[in-house]
Length: 377
Image (cartoon, rainbow, N blue to C red; front, side, top):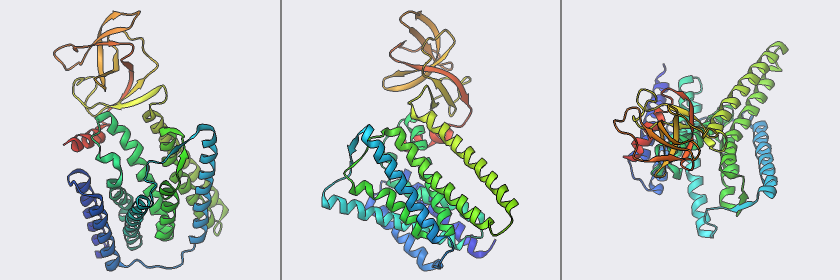
């Protein structure tokens, strides 16, 4: 590995540690964080000075990004005439807009500068390029309000899939765009998708689930269009057999990615029959271990003895086993955790029941549990 690559890897690791420290341990004011990230970006740019030159795909990708995002706004605002609109939560005063816009522009420009420095100087090292989206995602996360909240374990699983995953996917796309061109196209995408939040007074009221879908799928769609465009344009110069082979590979990978993301959104939206939950305690140890993910059938409310069910108790979701059915007509059940010595002190009713556990995935929930426990401290 070259000496320059070792420097870049060291910088990436340092930025990851810095971001994690700011997220979990430092009760840092947002202005101080923006200042520190800006200083880091300035120092890296002064030391490495990424080369600026006319890239072959610059103009084409620029038009592709603009057209894709404008099409997205046209569709969503048209849908708003049927679903209604809501007022933005951001300040609409001149001072408030100025502060919001200025701070957002500074942090976006700083992160994109860091991205460009790492990508352009490490473009021949795959490990460096792979780590770049992780670095930029972690640098961006402290600006998300949701990480400053005292989230419960069930909320944390949804938060990761609804906030961190869309942010990470977006940063993969922006890293790819920066690799092909420079930070200007990445900044353009950020400006067009984020700045309207501060200037437009109303937005289509599509609901939280569809907002999450859009936040996740928009960068994926533009990313896939960009990959298809650049691959086909490159291969047209070569032979048609390779072009057809690449097309098939792209379509298969696109389908797989879309399928996985749609399944995750389906299971975390809590809008459909099946939903998911990360087990955050050891009360069901042996049957359901801490860190497992369970799939819950919300439509199934007719339980029998031995079923593992989810129900609400004191505002939280609990997953325990039914040990006695008191009234099958009115649906009243006694529950107990398999690892607990005593039965639960409450009776589960039809109103408090949430659904039946139908499937579990071992250990998949450990990252969300660890993150939730770290935040709670």
